[in-house]
Image (cartoon, rainbow, N blue to C red; front, side, top):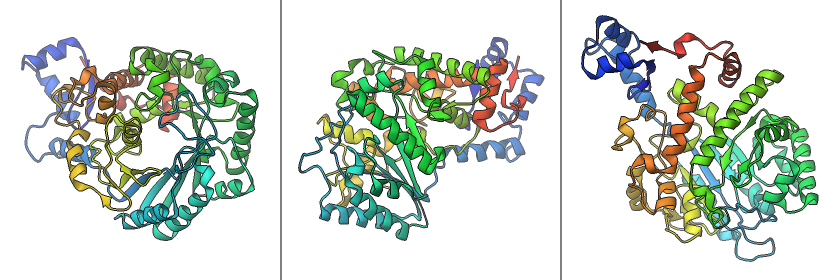
Length: 454
């Protein structure tokens, strides 16, 4: 049984220890082990007590010195992906781009953020259709902020000299979608072999231009027709990628109409687990070390307080406006998922607009649901210190945010991911150790990361 305290300090125990613990019959060896692990203390103020408080505080603290803002300068797109989340508009459509006034208000919003560091992510639609807006925002942000990074989420269907010159800037990164083998990518995204070939050429050109460290890709998995793990790994290796981020079709937007199977988690969990073990075997066989990003991130969350770079698992993840999504019409949302629910008219979760600023009453209203520390189910879960919460997803799937936690997709998915992470962490398989060491940046996996008592 995996046991952890509120600070995330953990160990593995057998049934005999659990029985002694539950009956308040711990022996001297048990007590010494818990004190040594920092799971217990004999006196307030001694080192194990202070260490626990420090770890707990680190788990609760989410740095406030930086901002993460998603900008949607246009909703127009030149593809018709089957799982599009926010109902893209045709390239020739009118009224789906920022006008000059909205652009100016976006810059004013950015200027007022109380931070010196920011990551700005351009989404769409296809954001490179408004390269002029991207240039204006990046030039402004470089003047305004001390540290800035830009991510362009693009389908890479079109590259011209102006786009390549923009992408060549060292503070610009690319995030794109590669769904796997040629035929599958064509079915899910492009619709024609010619468009898929164009994407492959452009992806190779982008990698040659700015290098693999600034280009990331992820596959969206349709569980009605998922790629074989071996084929998906091969497709990423063909382009030299060493990391991929598996994600299922998102149920929160328009994709639910054509992919109703995205609502359940059982088939996804089985596929994900099989993929990870296939990847581990592949790494051991080839000596190369591709990672599945989300599992590697969850492992880092278990092992180290402060691994909060991925907002999906921040806890607390209180909406403040420094993490915001600004839509094509200037509406501000606390997350991209909230924007999707507004697009399908399920519920309006906007928290202001760039013309009038943030609505702090709305922010305060949704804030309590973005922390799991007091959830009546989460408080009994050993993964609570590493996990988060997703009320937007609960609302999307169930129409409410107060369902029992174990019935939610978010909980079922993350129970499976953390179960798998712990299983791998305590595995004695050399192939597993090989991948984990490379994912975590370690030469060997020390026994201290796998404490146990019997």
